[in-house]
Image (cartoon, rainbow, N blue to C red):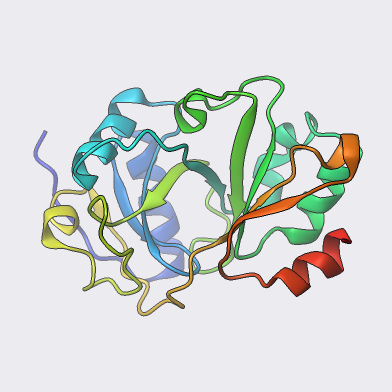
Length: 208
């Protein structure tokens, strides 16, 4: 199927276009909170493979599942322990990716080799309220910087997606990745990647 990129900037139109694209098995270019990303149905293996092809190679790294409303992830929250569930409520929506226990092995295409752990995100912005969870990764060729502007996305990606949403200039900061998988058992948490949320804000929310 030949893909046609479409620029959509309005909130309602963008949400509807994203939901339609994802439901049909397409790949979308979209503005997250800090950087532009690629999105597809997290349960559609063909669409996930296509994202890896767009990026140039499959690096084997796990990806996050992103939601655009806290209510959309309520089923997943039921699987979490009390402390992790409370931490998710405190930190999301926000510029963080939370690695949480995944006892039901949800979204194996995002988890990759270790299905006991899952990265999750909830962001605010023009796409808030979209009802579809998405498999999300940065919109860059493998090994290249992730773009903070729509025009910064290389043509090899921008012109080959099914939907392209122009959200203007973003912050340029990746999400802070926080491992919460031991929080309920030991109270421990760790930062796997520095980014848009400071360590001080994390300490204020989670304790030392």
